[in-house]
Every structure is written in C-alpha cells, then in structure tokens.
Image 1 (cartoon, one colour):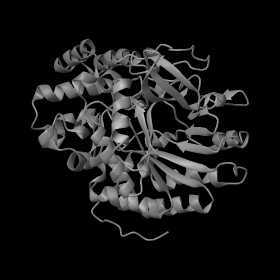
Image 2 (tube, one colour):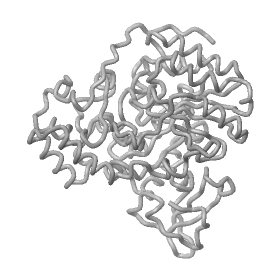
Image 3 (tube, one colour):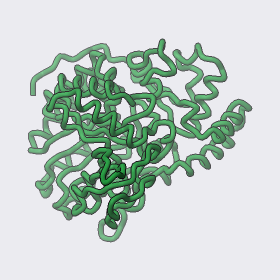
Image 4 (cartoon, helix red, strand yellow):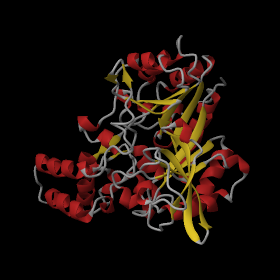
Length: 436
C-alpha cells in the first residue's frame, strides 16, 4: 500500500438537522416562510446536511434549481399538496412537537416505508428465528446493517431507506453484533459477498467498523469472496479517507481485507459530476484505491438532479478518468417522495441510451436503467415495436429466484409508467416469479 499525502485542512464535522434550519448560515438569508416550508417537509422526511456539502457542493447562485440543493434540502413538492399544507399549517401555527409528529407519522405510514419486501420477504432465519439487521434477497449476497452505521454524513432527499432515519423503531433495520451474521454465513456457503450498508457504515470510527469487518475475515468463511460497503462518504465527507484523525487506520483496515484474500469494494453513490470536482473528493478516491479497494459508482436517475443524458455521460467519463467503475443507473424506488423524483421508464431508457453512446467501452460497465423491485433487479433493455405494438423489453439481471436471472419479458408501453407494478404484460404472459 503506497503512502498518500494527507490533506490537513479537514473541516469540523458540523452537522445540521431539522431543528437547526433557522441557524444554518446559508439559510438565514431566506424568508421565514421559506424556512418554515423546509421545516414542514423535514418533519416528515429526514433532513441532515453538513458544512462541507453546504460550502463545497451547492452553487448558491443557482438555488433552488442547483442539483445538490435538490439532493439534500427539503422541497415542498416532496409531499402531496394536502399533506404539505397540513404540516405547514402546524409549523406556521407553532403547534407542539407532539402534534407535528403525529401528523407526520400518519403521512409516513402512507409512503411505503419498506418497499420490495424488505421487512417480510428478505429477512433470513437462523434456527427458526428471524435475524434483525440482516437481509438476504439474492442467493449470493447478504446485506448487513450495523446499528452504529444507520445514519449518514448528509441525507439524500430521494433515499429509499428514509424510514431508517425518522426515529421510528418499527421501521429500522439494524444489528448490534456480527455473531449471528457469521453463524448464518457459515451455514450458507452459497453466499459469496456481504454488503455492509445503512445509512452509511463509513460514519463509524475505524475501530468500530473493524469490529464488524474482522469477523468476516476469519476461518470458516473461505467461501466469502468479497466485502462491499455502501457509502456516500466519498461525496459528502471525503475527509473520512484523507484527513480525519483515523483515516490512516481506515486505510490499514482496507489493506487487511485485501491481505486476507477478499475483494473490497466501496459502492459509492455518485449522483452528479460536480461531486468529483473538489480536491478532497479526488484525494479520497486515490487513497481508497491505493489501499487496495475498488470504487464502484451507482445512483438513481433523479428528476431535478441528473435527469439529463449529458450529465450522466460527463459523470461516467470523470469516473473512468479517476479509476472509478460505473456500475448502476437505478430507477428511483417506489417509496417516500418518489412522485417528486420519478422519471418515467421510457424517458429513463432514452436518457441511458443517449448517455451510453457518448462514452467508451470502459464506461459501458454501467447497467441500467434498473428497478430494484420485489422479484429482483429489472432492467429496461429498450423500447421496441413488435408486430405493430410498442413495448418495453425488460430483463431480470438479478433475481430472488436464481433461475429467473437473465429472463427476458415484455410490457405494454406506457409513457407515464415509472415502476414495474404500473406495467401490463405484452406479447406473452409473464412468468409467475415476475411480480412487483
């Protein structure tokens, strides 16, 4: 592992949440009504941002249309108009915290807090008991949610795991220890990789993250080929890898994973080309790579943020330039403020194809647009005309039922449809394992 010079200008980890909206420096120039609007939305959907994002990623001359502003700051369109007006009236009337929370909880319950069977179909069992904080949807991959990693350096407003962050225990997926995870993995040799996710596991100090990773390197888990870490820290807090006081320890931990013969991948959420412009972001990428890890990039296609083929092409080219592997373009999941961010499937297909034509084969590793639906990851291959009928060509590129992987099927074209359950079969019936 080559030593990389440390940038010693790391700012203080200064976080702001819903209760801090009035004191965020950049918000203080806004009107009381504008801040109350943010508070109303933030009462329902989680809000958290840090000073680095505010100072380095948002172009304040372009607000409110700036993509990072849309990505991190509550917008009124994220709630249905009647829901927004209800909560806004409570906020403006200075209602009690309990009144606002009661209204918010009712709205949250209607926003599909756990899509695609997260709390029902994906929960594995060990000796008949459900394992909290573990998900096993696809045969080869287990997801693990360490309790201390169930927050982030900043929250993405579209995040399909928003329910993890609103303080409602019945919505949370989290595990404190790895004992049951290791025991489960030893009984399931078909599992080849573990994805440590959240939240953002990189929010943890290295000594704490080490407690969750080291057990995966021990005997009896030789079938485990790879450890993945889902993170947005390379964007929202690149100092984590460069100049935090335990960043060197983190690099050593990454090196130990590689020395143990495991592939280590950071599944980093890059949503816009601007996110790789700051010097700390590029320094973080270099240090991670020099420690032996691979960075793979993934993001949903998000209205108001990156719904432009040129934006994606530019982002992929920059990633290739710096050794980041383009991996997924997702469709925004059917949860939370989906109506604000969704892009119809036909438009998504056009954006993907227009973007992929602008890049070399090195960037064509990216798969998309893909829906992480109940049966698996459904790829929108293309929009075709077959026998005079316009259809979506769809393909399962990952599936709950392994035999369904690679299955091609067709749906009637619907220019408004943005999710699998809005589509109807075309040309032939769908197999039983294709359900939304």
